[in-house]
Length: 320
Image 1 (cartoon, one colour):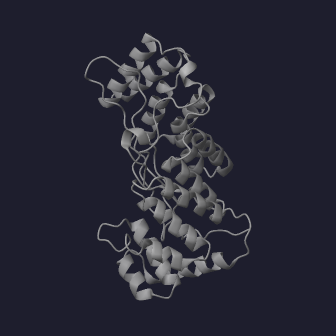
Image 2 (cartoon, rainbow, N blue to C red; image 1 turned 90 degrees about the vertical axis):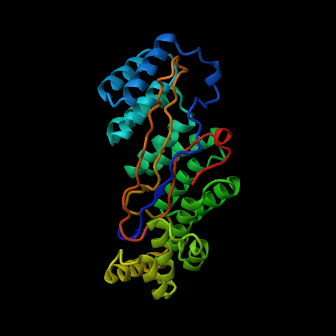
Image 3 (cartoon, one colour; image 1 turned 180 degrees about the vertical axis):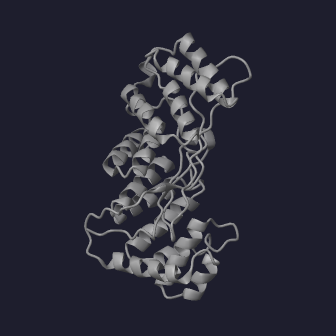
């Protein structure tokens, strides 16, 4: 079994800009309309959350969930509230209840998949991303999530296929994170030149993220181009750590193939800004809760990235 060195990677998820937040399962249209009471409770919860009154928002979301109407808007609102507060342990069971109501909802499956990745529950994460992809097969965020899951299990060729297909089906999207993930996947499979060629333009830009720059620096280091690598790192990593990372990456790439389980958690590289699906309210005061999942700082040299989902029809493109 090949183990990815701890110093190396931080797989990242994108920030939900392509996934449809409204019900997306095949039988959603057959459900009875949401009740006026449930709609009012969600509206009140959204307003409370927007004002920072989280206890009131939590209470109203829970009351709406207890209506048992077969809709998941309240579940998603509450889960995103918990995520905004950094309470993943509370968000996950709420999202799992939402999947009991609507198993194929793409956005719910995306959020669940990301939380499973954080917990190293790769089989569960794969199932969640696959369910979401059944509903939105070309969704950039779901495909990236699936790619990260494959990389974390050492299935780098499968991961690369996911990233490449995602890029092909979403040409108008911001693909920086996907390219960064793909480059790390190439590094993990012993192909530093491919990684360097993929990132040399974006990674050399003044505004490039540290993840992109560090992945490009690792590629240059593996190719023996140390001066270029040090310039990209710009003092953010000491030389001993850089050399150790290169050595461990070489050691990993030279090990026999097969299924590998790296002992590290993926991180989220982009803010997830998504609106909780809300029943259509009355007045103007509705400010829908936004969930933001910040990327965990990368260890040393870093890995792929995956981000959230937003309806391509609404955005006109896919995501990073």
